[in-house]
Image (cartoon, rainbow, N blue to C red):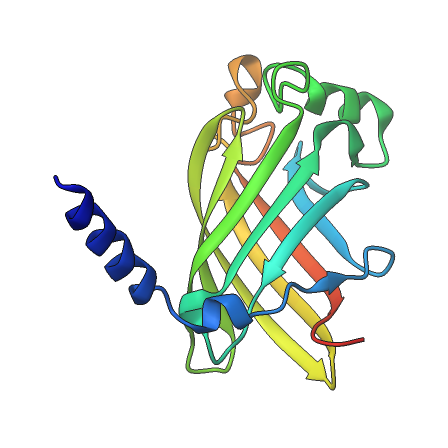
Length: 190
């Protein structure tokens, strides 16, 4: 391919990027009031856990879904379930494998609006280097520049490589984990 052809191709690709992409503000997340928690079942009883340390970059505009994107990272060493033995177990190789993979990542780049006014993000959850598809549904409340996002997803822990070996028995540990997100943020000028 000639230099001119490559330049033309780059120009066409650049012009095909939505102009709104550059105009979307990155949300300033209020981490003190935000929470990412999960609900799982152990021996027939539900327990709740959450992440103490995580960070996210969100650019979302209901009017520009094609340009919206979100990425979050969760530090494995910050998982907290209120039971120190369970927390240690979750860091082991059969679960999150903290030593080899200290972060879990969540990425969303495909958004759609639903008839009830909520939104859905086709997302990828990466655990221990394995990518698993996740459907994340959420609602937004916005007042001036302040946004509150409430969302939920269900994760198949076995498909995500969580709970291998002796932990794979779903009669002891439930197969599905419900994740809830409450995100408080500001968007636009302060």
